[in-house]
Length: 299
Image (tube, rainbow, N blue to C red):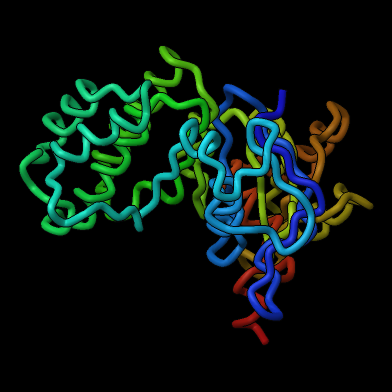
């Protein structure tokens, strides 16, 4: 069952369409990655889902109703981003207390343990935290809320590698123990590929692809070797990315896996077969042109 549905969704700011005719469904009790480059429309879409913004056109439904200024939607959803605001009179411990008052499912004890683990003093105020510590605190709120829909918008901003790894692990363990729908936005997939079940790729406010993580791993194949051999093998396949590694030597990412016969032929032609990782695939599907930066430099 889809917990989030949009149909022909548009959000315009003046003449700029941040979300452009987007029709999408996000399934219940899955971790979905919302992926796209900076400016792809990720934050705008998430704010529409959270009820912070009103659509310019089309429809959006969360839990089957319009989320805009809906108390029933907001009480079952938490939106975690770098711009969360709390009264300066409240310290972190006060915030945990108030979170419990608003979200009946909020586990203040879990949040307290996370703060202790990450070395965050509950007597501090958010304004006194470093950027990384503030992101970690907000992430802890999202994990401990245990609401039906948890939205994280670039939650690891400022976190170092060790903290990011612990955040992903904590989120996964909590998700397994207390299933919920999680939407996690990022501009890259690298660290998230093992966490996500579905991937939604946006570019220019439009849906490029929606794939399962398994589909993303087999969507394309990479070939490295002599240019003439690569061109012969690829034939009429859709080329997602091509770059020259050395004179006469290329790397090509092409759509669809090779057959057993083609795989044997590739090796006979001196081509190396390489996997195309999910994060690389997302870059290739949203890049301007097919040659990457090399084409710009060559010109």
